[in-house]
Amino acid sequence: MKIKVIIGSFLIGVSVIGSCVPQKKYHEVNIRNAEMMRSLRDTEDQLDSAFQKLADMRQSNAELEENLVAERQEKAELEARLDRAMSTSSSVRQELTEKEQRLSEQQQRLDLLQNLLDEQRSVMENLKATIDKALVQYRSDELQINEQDGKLYVSLQDKLLFSSGSATVNQDGKEALAKLAVVLNNSPEIQIMVEGHTDSVPIRGRFEDNWELSTARATAIVRLLTGTLSVAPERVIAAGRSFYEPKASNESADGRAKNRRTEIILTPRLNELFQLLN
Image (cartoon, rainbow, N blue to C red; front, top):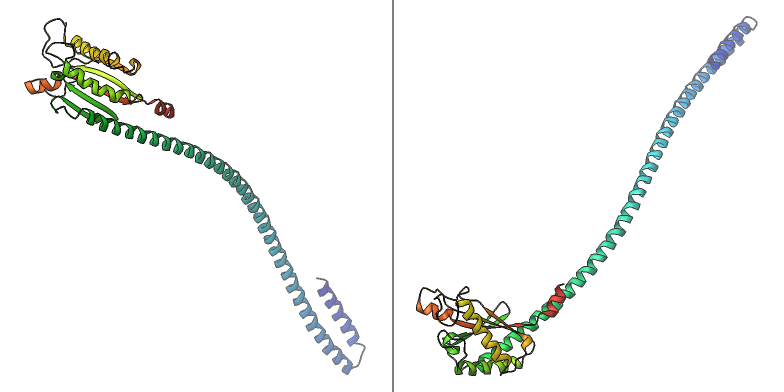
């Protein structure tokens, strides 16, 4: 605006001068005036361009400031997330360390348990081999030895031990039990359960029923083992099962003969295993 005023004033001055100077000088003045007008217009254009550039730079600067604020905010958020991640990572590492410790302890227990089981299995295998050798003279229809669920079952048929309906151990039975007792006395860590079994035929005579007969037979064998044969009484349990755990069908004579038996069940001591499991 100031430039336009200046130009207007200049033109008025030139007109006044033109009325007072010769024609030649007036022409020279007009030429200079035109040149100045062009120069002024160029300057004005340059100023407009400079103002536009300044406005653009201010706009760009405002945008840069907005971006800077956004980046600072993003940086703060990232730092906060990093802090949380570091805290979480520390917690996770601590938890992993604790889990690894528990896993290591459990693995040690499992290894110890496996060693104990392997040891017990070895003990029972050796015990079976020893009993097999000690009782090798007896036929399979008189005596059988089987391993099941970590236990050893010495099954003596009724005809080897007792007369029909009797709970008194006969001489053949005493001899078989004496051979077995030698092995048992050399294996003091083995627990002993004596189970009497009968067939399903109702008993007649001095015993009230098959329960009483099976229990009396088991007790007779326990007394023989712990008395004459010197097996420690605290190792032995007597039990009567009557005909409620048959090995074969009671519908046939052969099946009933198999069911009339006394089983001496040998079990390794499991105290260490129970302590480890608890």
